[in-house]
Length: 305
Image (cartoon, rainbow, N blue to C red; front, side, top):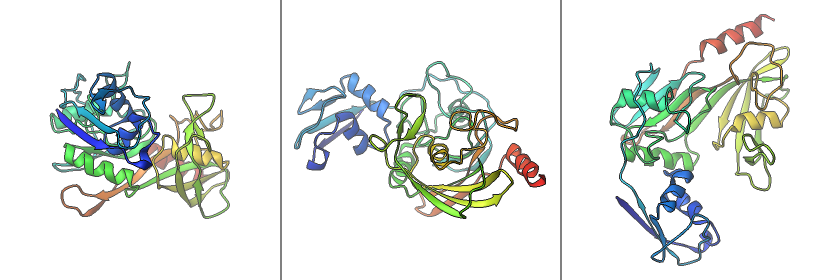
């Protein structure tokens, strides 16, 4: 068991306790913190507390992070495309149609099942039993580079860089329409869609800050090939931002056009480059996942038109 104790400062006052803990220990997911609170392992001034408690200045917060449990998820011998590996991190080139971590009703065939088989017990346990080693994720139908943390110290250091927005994350995408300017920035907060809870949307009132830089790489008759660099990493960020400026991603069945003229499995989006300060060497490292075959073929088709 790992006990954490801190006091509420004026800038934290009025926040929900689960949000405060999430901000204080950025390596824990909000849902995992709520689980800890529900199990009675969080206290305010030595009294048990509920997730919706709003903190006050000088409140003393105590909570216990349980020891890492053996995940009740079957390791599976699923081939991995490994870009780089050492004792701290594993950089994976994730294929299309692969979910990153298990969820209710989806406990097999995920990236977590594959890395559990590959790494055995060498995975961080900070994010709970369903997400061993997972410090960030990309959507099921998005391909490309993903960092897996093999111990808790590496997880903490990578999570801190994610929180500070210092990790380099460059994506390649093909969008509908010809983008006229060579580069641009979309700076618009993203939150849950007001009526469709499965979707994200530009949400000025309740959204979190989100910034995407984009650069045109190639223009086609009806489409544009772009590079997007993330400053923040909100759910569906590139997909929502590009849709908001009238250029949804080709193949995006959620935010894009209803009919796609090409046979695709979801959005044409690839996490190409990931760069970060290595948790052991403290040196900046950068890795690149090559474009998947379907993406290369699509570019060839568009160039031939």
